[in-house]
Structure formats: C-alpha cells, structure tokens
Image (cartoon, rainbow, N blue to C red):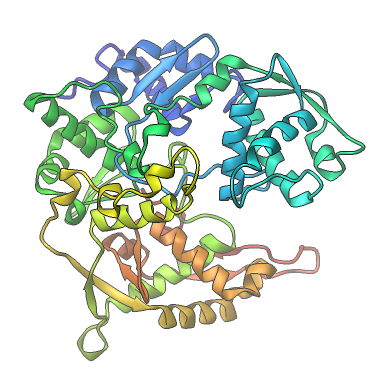
Length: 471
C-alpha cells in the first residue's frame, strides 16, 4: 500500500491533491501568482507537500513568507514549457537573454526602478554580448524587453506603481512606468542549484539528484531510480517502455509506481503494452493540452488521424519501419542547439573550446539503451500532401495567416504532435509512435455560418476521442 499522504485524512485527500497539482503546475507560487488563493492553499499543506514531493519525486519545496518554490530534478531537456510573451507566443533567445539580464540589473537597484532606467541598465550589459544588444530606439527591441519585464510582473517580482509598460514600448519619449521590486520573489525566481559559470554545457544542469542534496550509495541509487521513473511518467504525456534502460524499465513496470502517483496527484494511471501514462481529464495539471482549440491544434489532430490511418496499411502499401533516435541521441541533439548560443569569448571562452565529446557526455543510465524498436515512417512530402488536403477541406476554419503559410503550419503542427509524444521528428519526415493510435478515425466538420452568426473561427470535432484530452 502506498505511504504517500499518510498524514492526510480521507476527507481532506482531494484538497491535498489539489495543492499537489497546483505546485506541480506552477513551480513558483506568490501572493498574486497564479492567483490570490494559491499561496494559502500551498502553505496549508506545506509540511506534507515537502515530505511527499521529495520522497516520491526528489523535488524540494522551499517556502518563505511570500513564496513557494518547487526545485525540480531535471532528467532531460524539455522544450514544451517556454516562457510566454504578452501575446502568448514562446520566448525567443533574445527575450530569454533580456529576462536574465533584467534579473541581474534588478539586483543592483533599490526598492523601485523606472522602466527606462532599467532598459538602459540592461542595454549596457546586452551590448557586451555579440549579436544581442538592446536599442531602445527600436520598437522590436522595446517589445522584447517589455515581454521580459511583464513575465516578472505577472509573478510579482515587479509591481507596477505608476505608468504603463505598453505605452513606454509604444513611445518611450512620452511615456514611462515605475515598478516596485520584491526582493523575496526576485530571489525565488532565479534559484539555480548549480554555479552557472562552472557549467560546460546545458547537459550539466541535468542529473540533478546530486545538486538537490540527495545521498549516494546503493540503496539511495535504487531510490533515486524509482524517483526518476515516477518523474518520467509525471512530466511526459507517456513513458514508453522502449525508451527506458533495463533498470528504469523495472521501475516503470512496478505496481507501486502508479499507486504512488495516483495517490499523490489524484490522476488516473493508464497502462498499455507500450508504456504508462497519467490521464489528466481536468487539464489543471497539464501545461499542454491536446486536442485543443486553435488552428495548429486542429490541424495537428487531423494530421494525426491521417498518419494513424496510414500506419494501418499492410502489404505493399505498408509504411517503412525505422528505429527512433535513442534517448541519448535526442539529448545530444537538443544540447547542441542550445549550446550553440554559448558565447565564444569572455567568461565562458574556455568552455567553448572543450572537446565536443566531453561537452555532450551523457550519464551512464542514458547510455544503456534497450533493444531497438522500429516505428512507421512518413516522409515530409507525404505530410505536406496530407496538410494540403486538410487545408482544402477544413481551411475555412483556420487562421488566415497560417492557412496562407502551409510550411509554418505544418512545422507547428508536427511540433505539437512531437511534444505530445505522438511522433518523433527525424531527417526527412516523422516516426509514428504508439500513442498516435488513440486518434485513429477522427472526424471533423466545419461550423457553418447563418445570417446571424459571425464567420467561422474554429473547426468543431464530432467524435468522442477528440473530446477527451490525452495524458
């Protein structure tokens, strides 16, 4: 029997699980973020949360008077949780750089700071970085900078005291904004478990069990392996057995894993022959929902149905089966893309000169690969053809800018399917993963317009499968 939440009565278990989902969904909780009731909910269960999150997942919960900060152990590089701009788009590298430089600049200011003054401080640092810079005379630079400041404002690290950031971004000569600085929240936002100047690669941020202060030894290694297995199921749409090394595979198949996660989160675990997943039907824990609204999600769902149908073909029409990139190969590929932004001069010059094999070294666990699994392969040209068919049939419900740019729509749709572990992107196309079969036979219809209705904006999906969110 699971020992999770031992101190919680059956009558209060649902409230406790709500607090668990809240802190897992929002690693930083403040008096106003994600809402005004969140911090009180977490603080009520802080002691039990601290115990269970460390024991089950190896996560450390740090609470202060005005913050609750969850320090996660990182086992891989996840591209599905970006910071978002005011328009809801993922941050680009320029915005991330401005965010980090803003955090550094705020540490040199007092209780308040004017937005223009803060921009000048960030610009003075940004000009020292090749290819970055911040020119407040350029509207795109001002918008990117305000996106970074707004991200901090939403979390309470900055509080607008007077003026308007949007007005300043429009015309800094005529508008200004004044912010109060919350030091406690500012420190909670940036709380690294490594000395960043000592990192040789983004992969040095992984294998966080040591950085979190967990003990070594044979028994501790087994316990940490069990935590890693639980994290794999919790943090991903599905944990495929084929992706797991032998030791982790045993932990994934253990009944205790699903028992602990179900009692901790209140979600239902689903086991299939290919893997295990947590089902979040409420959508309150998942940071990415699928199926969902919007052109990209709708196009991705229809594309998933066509790929799934193609997978069912047999005989001479059967798709070619190819091996998927290993976990280590995917890690190295992502690390190279991220490390490509490391400066080649300055403080980390010596890091840029390290031998590539050392920079991209992976842990022993990641290097132990299971027997090769093969998956159906669809080519880029085939995918473009299917998207053209989808756009011709359902394009009336798609956003005009994406309908007119099929390459961008296809890239974003495939990116969403990959983020949901439905496909793996490979050179020349994509591999269909087992979870994709869940969307076999999806049907859709475009909402028709009557004389009193506005133009159609969305595609309405008629089948039951499309209404149930995936893990």
